[in-house]
Length: 217
Image (cartoon, rainbow, N blue to C red; front, side, top):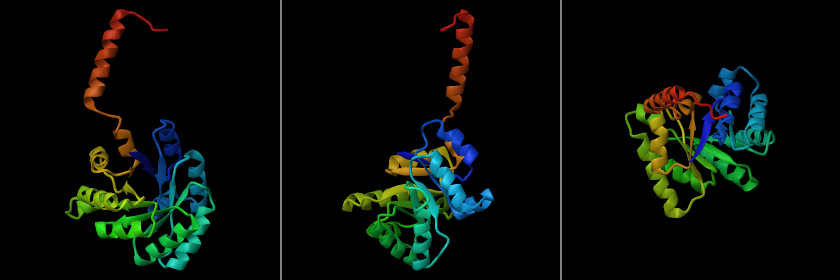
């Protein structure tokens, strides 16, 4: 499963990308607002840090305006993926982007029926929001399972990008359910490395090694 970082914090991104485990980046209007920087500048800088897909979201709500904004965003770098909302106009724009060879990430997906439409429109990625569904009292992970079954039934190429990920357990569950990718906040990415038994075991190993008085180098 590919792991994307959901961030516009370039300093954090550089640090975590150095692990070699970051496959791409997603952004949204909220993250851009928090950055306090011009959107096009931020996206261009992120595209220089990671080689994989970088999702940049349109701000328009009507198809023609989405197309104009998306084309502008796609000019920034070859790895830009234009992010559009899962609305009627968003899917109309997605279809046109697909015909133009522009990659898309259809976001704010909350049902398998929506995901089916996005795949039919030719979306590169579909972003089901599992955490927000959990907050709503539904089982977000069930949506990943349903979309996986539909896409496999009809051999759709659209990749399932698990979004609104809150915990390391969400990442594991999404991988088990068959998500192709997950986009996660930096704090959750950092938490994936950790387990108390790993830390305890390493502490014991280091203590025992020190007692030997040896040096490998």
